[in-house]
Amino acid sequence: MNKQKDFFDKFGDFLKDIDLLKSIIPPIHRAGYPFIILFIVCTVIFSTLSNFLGWIGVILTIWCVYFFRDPERVTPKKDNILVAPADGKILSISTELVPENLTEDKQKKMNKISIFMNVFNVHVNRIPVSGKVIWLKYVPGAFFNASLDKSSKKNERMISKIEIKRDVFVYVVQIAGLVARRIKCELEENQSVNIGDRFGIIRFGSRVDLYVPESFKINSLENQISVAGETILAEFDNKDVKK
Image 1 (cartoon, rainbow, N blue to C red):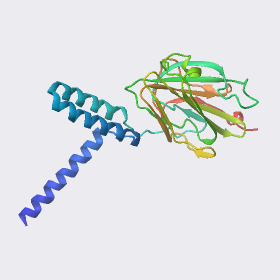
Image 2: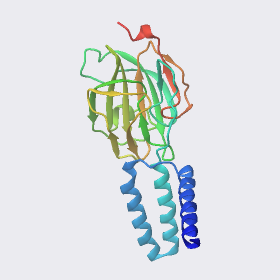
Image 3: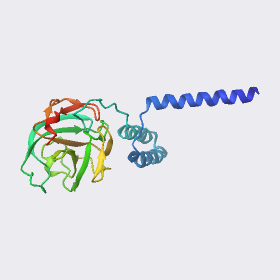
Image 4: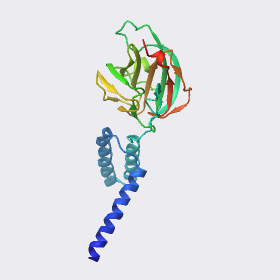
């Protein structure tokens, strides 16, 4: 009986250790597991060559795990708001033409909020506002530094058009950067989405542009640090979205 009790005590301590680790290490996005495994394998190989290379591999593996972290976020329970689609620094707030060139509104101007993600930011992207995805387009391009404004029009990117209400849209543009070479968008056309939902990830250092109607009130500032799914970037009145 004592041995059985000792076993269950140790098992209970083990479960507590797992809970402690979960509280310290945030969840990992599933897109990161192949890279983490690759980094671990390389670390093992490096460690057989020298201790120095092994420690370099350990550091890079820890960074890889950190890069693909996917922490839970608390989206504000407030109507008529748009939250940040990405973690990072707001580079600029400007007025630009819509990023779509297939509609009669292609000469229409919108407010654009550009967020730059460095290699230490969370790279999981989130839906800025509830609505319906009515159009998706992948645009091949270059890989300039995502902090440069020309990256919005020159770099590889994925454009998602979300309808809030009839004929009222916002655009979310995922943009690859100098290091980022892969944009993952999990949305589909005609899909209903909710504010704060995860919808994709970009590897490894990139940018997200959010286009909103000029009638919307911008609540963010340049050089502000945004948190995806939590930071309120803009808001609108019901009259702005009703015909």
